[in-house]
Image 1 (cartoon, protein in one colour):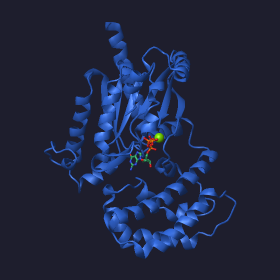
Image 2 (spheres, rainbow, N blue to C red):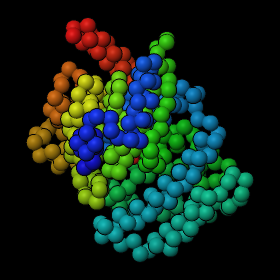
Image 3 (tube, helix red, strand yellow):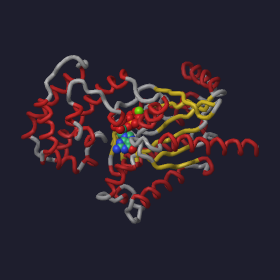
Image 4 (tube, rainbow, N blue to C red):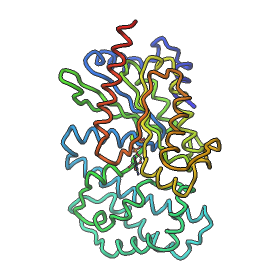
Length: 358
Ligand SMILES: Nc1nc2c(ncn2[C@@H]2O[C@H](COP(=O)(O)OP(=O)(O)OP(=O)(O)O)[C@@H](O)[C@H]2O)c(=O)[nH]1
Ligand SMILES: [Mg+2]
């Protein structure tokens, strides 16, 4: 897996990477006046959602241009959800022949919507009813009940519960809609916000797919902290990574271990965000944690299960004094920013006291 450790091995640690090296040296200069914080984690863990939360708070919401861009992502997501549910039926052996025509109709409609501008008209009332009936059909509900066994966007229930609002002309996504939208990050996104008077923080969001992880090495110099985002609800789900099917939580722990072992990050404090606590709690009520972690002896409540996963992250980290672990649900505005700022303050204080002891 080409993450930071293997990249260091591949290129050596002597600054000889041509494009990467110049990018890093620019960032080193910036680091004198700002704290650089890098968001890492596997694909879909919630990095961009955390990033959006901070961006939104500091820019007083999203601009109309932003909202319009997200409108396309959301139509794409709804389209994808129906396709995934249909694929899920096939995978789970649920007979979906009766709903094929409606799915085809929805796909054609949403593909048109993805490309439409606000002013062009496309009648929606009929298709919304088709979508709602389909979503409430026993075929799709049976499939949804086993959603941990199939590939399905986390925002399925949210978007399909909002069809009346979303599938209409003039739709402008709300902040909640934007936080629920998913487009995998290609490249990076950066955002600067005031950390305290006279000091700014730069939050850097990168992609978590295998191909994007190969670029992480370009962003690791002079970091004040790494925020590693883990999708807790992945304990009962699988992901495909570099063509290999893996348990999502085991995959997240493996990538974490690889990052933690990177010589370039040996002095960087880590903050682990155990994310998607809302989904974790829901899955846990019917699927015990022991299905993925046989060593877990219970009780199977969210508190004990989370503590067990937390211990796995602690065990995977060699510098016990430089790791902080928090639980989050990044779709909920309350608390994400405060948690990040408060944690950063603790990290900074710790770094200062370490430096004065050296
Ligand atoms: N229910 C729920 N959904 C979440 C939470 N955090 C993120 N999501 C959803 O998970 C999906 C993926 O989130 P992103 O933040 O885009 O994931 P990412 O880590 O940036 O993924 P990549 O860019 O592919 O690496 C989005 O649909 C989010 O709305 C959470 O706490 N609860
Ligand atoms: Mg992302």
